[in-house]
Amino acid sequence: MSHWFEAPLAEINVTSQQQAELRQGVLTKPPGSLGQLERLAVKFAGWQGEVKPELVAKHTSIAIFAADHGIAAEGVSAFPQAVTVEMVKNFARGGAAISVLAKHHEAALHIINAGTANSVAEVAGVVDCAVANGTANFALQPAMTEPECLKALAIGQHVINEVIADETRLFIGGEMGIANTTSATAICCALLNMKADELVGAGTGLDEQAIIHKASVITAALDKHQPLVKPLEVLTKVGGFEIAALAGAYIAAAQKGIPSLVDGFIATASALVACKLRPELKEWLLFSHQSAEKGHQRVLQQLDVTPLLSLEMRLGEASGAAVCLSIIDSALALHANMATFEEADVQAG
Ligand SMILES: Cc1cc2ncn([C@H]3O[C@H](COP(=O)(O)O)[C@@H](O)[C@H]3O)c2cc1C
Ligand SMILES: O=C(O)c1cccnc1
Image 1: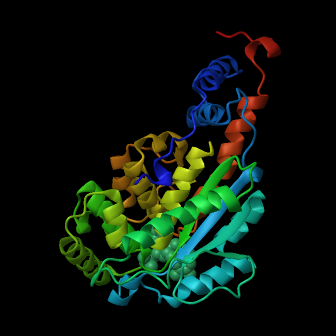
Image 2: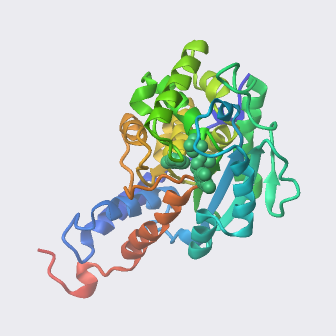
């Protein structure tokens, strides 16, 4: 049976990209002097099919996928599971970091329930796509069934196709789910063939002893659920509904010709799953920042990508990606509006 996520991704416009690169070479600056900002503008030229791509911040759609994790029962987070739903309410009321950043950048913010333990049906502004009331505890059994995993992936497709605006020029996915750094770490260990203690970190703020316990929970789960090879198998056995939804959203966005800006450690685990499913997807992803979560740097290295920023952030909920919107629009404004040597009558050297 073929799945929706196997359908082709959109084509990148190589001609626009090449023309944008030529333009960068004739703007009034030493060639290359705007560093990564030049490469950003060229990427957006390819994505938008325009030599001078439009600014993106005000046409960015941010979706936060929330879900609960049965593995929270193993004492792997510094915070109780109830915080997931409490934060969903906070997103909706405008008090969370991502609510403030979305408003600041005038980006649209959508809150999606992918499967929390407590109902959020009564919370205004939350799109309810819950697969179940949280995943099962993957220390004891697979986190999901395969149909549940496919349903969670399809939430991402639904959000891209039905929830975000058609004019979206950039997609940012975020997550909220207490204990999801444990799931993200297990996914990365399985897909990158690494050990738990190479990637495990403090998450919301565990102390050293608790991190050792978290690593042992992950190691035992990885042993228990062998074989863990295929991306869908890994996602089903040790994943999370919001992590799967995010992976689905990255693929669906690329199918529609919308690039995605990847957030921190958990979002990168989703991107890793999505890239294992569809290796061409990497061309549609931009990595925003390197989180302070210990494993993030290693996973970014394995993906062979360089994030834009490293601000010691370790919050998730798309916050690191949202901060990058100023930088992206700066790059695009410079690219579109700087004078060329000829226009400004400046010698090209
Ligand atoms: C108040 C609060 C707001 C958050 N926003 C994102 N996260 C982040 O922390 C969680 C992952 O860390 P762990 O695996 O240690 O539970 C996720 O929900 C993530 O998005 C938060 C965590 C808390 C406590
Ligand atoms: O980098 C992240 O996404 C992250 C790190 C710690 C806790 N929550 C999220």
